Length: 518
Figure 1 (cartoon, rainbow, N blue to C red):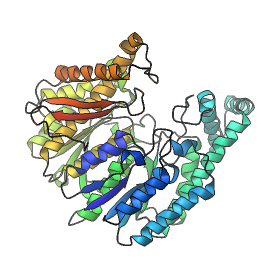
Figure 2: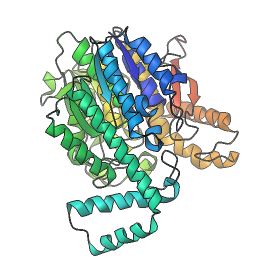
Figure 3: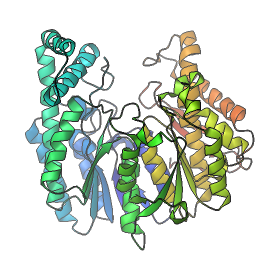
């Protein structure tokens, strides 16, 4: 099956991760636009050029996985800062209708985010005025939404009145208008589902909270979906950068498998509280997000591990979730309300019984847990799982681990499975969980660089990160992966900041083998 894939943006999580997962099944061919057709952080993709590429390629494909953000706005960040009129945006939406008319035998899976509302001052990924007024705009939305749903306290009412006076009206008006325009595009894309143009639509929420602009938009959008009775064709849930992996998995399960039945997944949790924890940057209990991601990926939950196609081992906090860079100062509930010894032993037992196990490491936000990795290395099971993910948000990790677990079933590329695990251990656990903060704290000051400003030292910083990653691997992986000698053939900072890296991994013993297509 040949698929054309339009990613959410140009970062590795959206471009490389789906390609790495697709490589686990030889029958899947994933066609991705060249770099020059995609966005460049806040610079919108050349949309006419991208559409021409899509129209040329799709006629030779069985299906399409389309990001509305990339096709309509020119990328994720451009969708937050654009100055396009609603009319011009809707004209691009209509091109999807024409695309289907010209290719009636394909299936189309699409994603369209509900615009996020960060709670801090930064214009790194938002409009310029968000650098000074971001936290205030978020709080205004949070209080306004709460006021519409329940009574504000006196202090909250006074705070809202003060925000009304302090936030420049032109900035708040621009932000609200931008969100209104994007909501209209959400609704237009929903209409494409109703008209049968799009077969399935995923609507992830990026950085969501209990109250605020995102919650207000979600209620309105979900109201439209419910009124049109499209709940089975449109799924709304927390997430964002994993959505390409999720839709790739759904395409594989629903259109490539011979029996086209849902993949049965048994969840193995590390804590009795796992399902009720509300992860950082999300608005609902983890257990509810898990259901959403499994359904969107073409799976179903089963209560009996013996009936499962694979086990999804979900490592969570005990009760209080922290950032990965603080894992050397764990909240006491990581020990009192969780038993890692039991969890790691249960994973080993499942593997000994011949079951496939994928690990979703969501004990911390923004990185994996080193203690879990050490324990799985010590009991000799780390290199026997079929997937590992532990990056950014809970739902980013869940979507990636679920999709990889599904593609690993009956895979004819076991070597790629192992390299994929190494890739995520290096990037998710070691970089995000340890090396990133170490380099920020101890190396960047010595070369006159900062988190967002590398100056002319980016090459030196890349070298420093690479050396520390390999050392972290040698210090941590003592028992497993004896048949692999990993080396890093590529390490770049795609957005010239410390948050994420573009990492390429090979085995020294098989230099032609790689996880990503170059």
